[in-house]
Image (cartoon, rainbow over all chains, first blue to last red; front, side, top):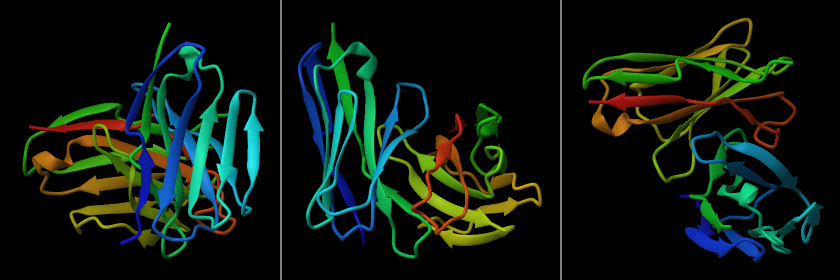
Length: 111
Length: 115
């Protein structure tokens, strides 16, 4: 069945270091969404990418959607302790109304 | 502007029991989706409700059922609870404008523990 995979599963960084998480879909996606979930919290929508090759920035966060619309990445420049949490990518599933989430990348930031 | 609310926040049940979880969508939203999130995993789509009908269902057994009311609030019912049903149950609301491409706003979730 349709799958969305993320790597790495977790990453430990020193505050100030960069961080990147990668997302790969088994099928072509019409769009991809990114969410952040703080420990003990719920997923919070960050951004949606729609166009092939699209790049969007939110302050220190850079999101990319691959040319084939099957992969995406999230890059954080100069991590801060407030960046701690799990980052999920998600895309539309077959049938049009469901959303399929990756397993997430958990980011640990050491001050 | 109230966001998505869910009740209860925590629940402990025993195997075989039944549970009902409740969700009120963000003001102005008409679509509610339910997800199950096991520890260390991403949310898994259970089903979506729009206009009081189940619009799409994920890979969950019939023990999982739901309902949407005229005020757009929703309930998730799980019968014959199993230990494996222990998880965080998330409700997400959105405004119907093409289905799964809508921005979803998640509630705080209900933590269900089955003993």
